[in-house]
Amino acid sequence: MPEPRRSTTKLVITGAVISVVVIVVIVIVATRGDDDSTSGATTTAGLVIQSPATVTGITGVGGAGEATSSTAVVPNTYPLVRSLVEPGKFDCTTLGSWKPFAEVPITLRVGQPAAGSTCGETVLDLPEGSCTDTCSAVPDDWEVREDPGVTPQALMMVVAPITPGATTAQFLCIKDSMPQIRQVLPVTTSIHDACLAATSNSIEIPYVPPVTSDIPYVPPPVSVDLPPATGR
Image 1 (spheres, one colour):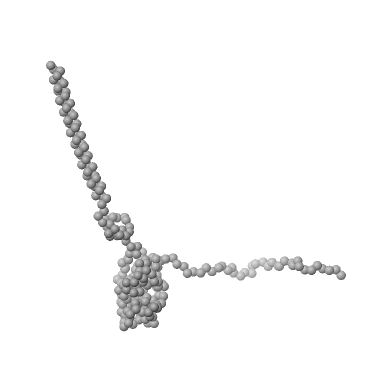
Image 2: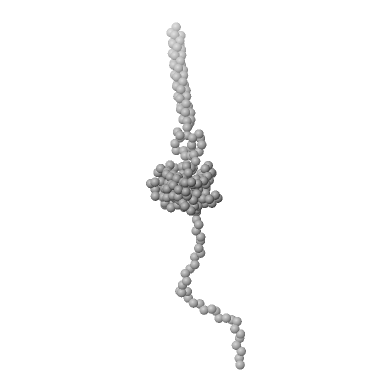
């Protein structure tokens, strides 16, 4: 009778081992499932961008998903002074003076022209009616734009709208402290496009060699049209 007992014992042991193996497999599968869920949640959260400000290394991104303007205004190096050097009634004959920065020795000329005219290529025209009695300051919508790479003395630009709210304005570039010829351009024109665009007004002059006396003299060839000599 010992043989049946041994068989029963073996079956019990085998069943216990199988149960342990099944439990271990269930635990491993459950653990991997938790890890996968955690990993998936982390990956998904990393792909969500809360606002453009949290993204670094990306240029041209503004608020609400809008691209920033390439003509962004750089803050002035010095406080902008709108007051004229002296108040007065200025026209194209009697010009006023404006010093945009007290710390920079650059003075610009301003005047109020007659309707439909201008005071000059390097003069900033004041809006019509602004100097009927007296002028003491430039309009509030005039601004000075700077290049962030250089000082105002080296390069700056005055943007002076012809009329309030106009889409065009007077652009006066100042290079090396010297006012350039005034331009009328869209108000969104950048300082690089207005002041640093490559332009050339030069005229090509053909090269003429200098006169020299070192050229050897070559006599003209003998003519062959002479009549034949006749004998006497």
